[in-house]
Length: 151
Image 1 (spheres, rainbow, N blue to C red):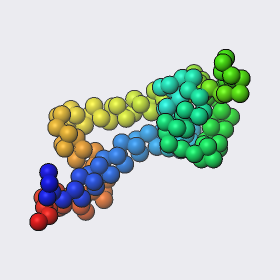
Image 2: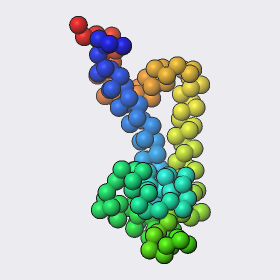
Image 3: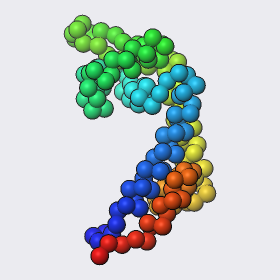
Image 4: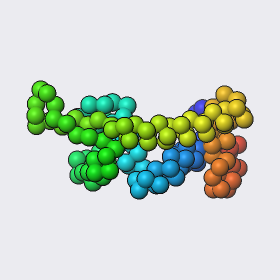
């Protein structure tokens, strides 16, 4: 694709991602949580028993940036923190039944949206991304870039 203008692809990805993530954002707000809580909870639910250190390393987040998020998830009983058997100083994180239920609700909403779009446009990745992006009003402003090629 040398010589192609990636502006369209970059914007397409941006708008498609906004639609995908906003699907979960709208639900999680009803629980008094935000996107960061969703990311943490999702990861903890998928890797139960992950240590705080490994969670932060995997998510590329600083310890300072995690404290309030983990505290709220614990306080609201979405996760529990337990000492590891090998070293009592090390904390492992586990989803509670409430946390697992929320992750499943969020995943279902996103999976349903993805499945509905696939039914509508098929399996072509560009068509899927364009359908996701079409949910965003800003995408209409940049669609003209699709055919733009640099010299």
